[in-house]
Length: 286
Length: 306
Image 1 (cartoon, each protein chain N blue to C red):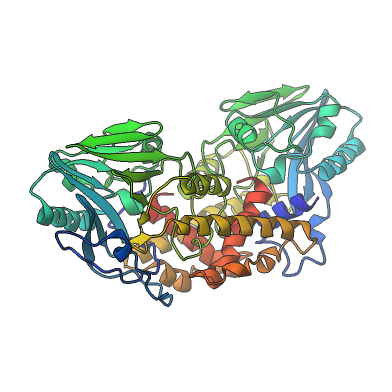
Image 2: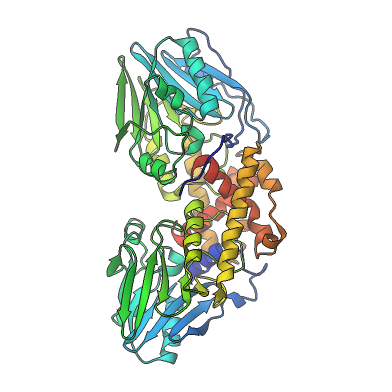
């Protein structure tokens, strides 16, 4: 449980209250966003599960405790078994604790590129995938098809974005937490690839809302566009500073974006470290 | 996806103490060159100007502002290392020409980062071959930079470059800071040219950009096992004692242990970076301003497995 809380703190620093005593962010809810498409979890971590007439597809278990809670929440909407668990990507704050689903016979799926991360950096609480996908893949169960979509490298290199065919909802894990700026030094994000991915998502006109890997149960597409615009504004401001001869310390102290971005959650806390990350992107090529 | 890069100023800022810049024919002894300097105040600005120092027979250190490379002069030509950027490479080439008429035959990249490997065209134009660990190539394709000359020769593990009776060992330790870093060891083996893995006397930069903590720690231990007299630094002090590697390794171990302890302690997870301290290392330059970001990096390492 400690590990989960730490992982949550790492990823949630932007939206957490200044003191976490209220712990509202850990309160779990189940929200049906479209027929059979559920957003389950809390601010601290969120998963998609899909109800079909032949069983349930669920996604990131998060932790053993969360997986148990999620299993109970699924049982409240159906008696059908969980047949698949899809990992959104490789990070431990999303993929641990899936044993309860393994025990009921679910098949675990991830993108192929998660496997090296899982094998090089083992974790006892991780259930290894049974199958992997190498690109886009359509998983059909009963009356529903869940599209697994791969956009290459962005936050790690095995991220899958998901959509139940015929609905206008995406499950976008970690690439955007609605209305917040994102954790300062952008752990395991490639800034350029991340912005490219956000552009590719934005260009798809078959969705209008998304479930995130953290944050509120569901958010409009605008919230993702906001994050994309924030990233581009930050990158432009840093590049401009570099081209005008600013050193890192000076950029760190003087970075400032337009008012619309200053209103995003976490701006004051994270803008400087975000600028530092982008500074390294332009000067180191990392 | 291609980013258009205009002229970039090297921004890595580290403290330097003024090493004596002796260009005498014979050259000072290693011990003389390593005479300790008073611990300078943190001023956050790179050293100005450039300097070239003969370290041993045919072995030179070249620095422009905040970054340093080495070059070897042999009977059959010159081996240069990181060109840094176009402006620095021009000065680098001129400094080599002050020492020898020999052409530059090889340029060796220490790793893939742009603050070390831009500007090599001047060496390419005179016919030099570029050498790097093969893992650098994927990075150069993934994030193209028109100022980087692509390697001609790559290798997958350790590699020994031979020229004019001299050798330069390129030692590969796997991933650590990026995944194509080499530590260079000119013959007869007294010196290691170490770029970015050690900043002697200092705390690591903020959130430790492109360092994999567990690989970084492993690599430092492997370097500690080598037998050599001094480190030539890619930034910071020109020469440092091998104990600088040990000090960095011990700092990382203490920081990682403190992070794990803090995580197990039951404290507020959102405040842990404020609690994680390794006060026995408070003497390190930059410790006060960097410890919280160093701690954040380790919290992310243990929290998400990155």
